Each structure stands twice: as structure tokens, then as C-alpha cells.
Figure 1 (tube, protein in one colour):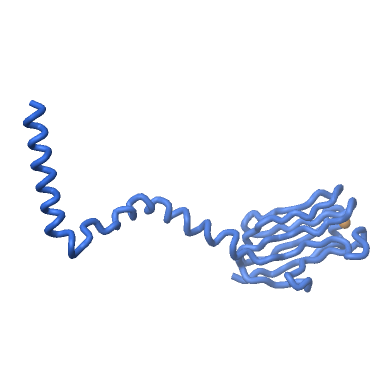
Figure 2 (tube, rainbow, N blue to C red):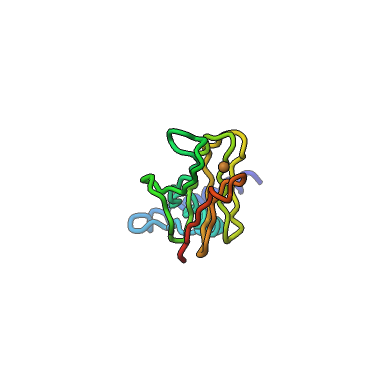
Length: 155
Ligand SMILES: [Cu+2]
């Protein structure tokens, strides 16, 4: 039994070597194209993820002023520190500049956007918001009569 097996194996091996020897010189036999099957499921979720954080435009939601965090001022600022009144729709990285214990910053509007800091306590965190076409409002909740502004988002 073992003798026959060994002989067959040897013959098969010899044959394989012979075949490999014949065709091996010219072309590689297995082009690696099959992995596309395994990466196919990742491609669907990968594309949106790539566009999420990378393209978010920075904004600052500020209450008070740089000199006086308790000042009755509120502003939505762009990366240059200039007040914004209109924006193109898209993803934004909103960083709060709330150094006040009596003010807060809340941005709300279309797409169920409603992000805010606490009135008490300070907050310099960053949140990502997706702004759609429409009018968004930013207020300080305790003083929304005077501390408020609007930004028009165009689609
Ligand atoms: Cu306030």
C-alpha cells in the first residue's frame, strides 16, 4: 500500500514539475484578482466614512467675547474668526467657545440639528453637524431675546 502511494505521489509530483517547467517561463498562472470578492462588502461602507470627517469645515460657536466670556454676545465664526451669515450645505466641525457660567451656545435647524453647551460650566469641545438648506438659529438659551443669530444655508 505505502509503496504504491509513494510511487503515485512521486509520479504526480514529477508530472506537476514537468507541467510547471513547461509553462512557467512565460506567464504567471494565477493573477490575484479574486480578492475583489472579499473587499466588495467593505467598499459600500468605506466610501461614506471617508467623506465624513475629512471634509468637515471648521466653525466656532462663541458666547461672550475673547476679553469677557460673560459679555452678552453670541456669534458663529468661520475659520478666520469672521461672523458667518450664510454657508453652503455640508459637514461642519463646530467648536464651542463657551467660557461662561451663565451663557450657552445652541445651534438648531433643519435635519434635526440641535447641539448645545451647558449654561453652567464651560465647553470647548467640537461636534460634527451636517447642515442642509434652510435657516439655522444659534442662541444662548437663557438670553435668547438678545443673544441670537441666524445663518442661511444654501443647498
Ligand atoms: Cu446668555
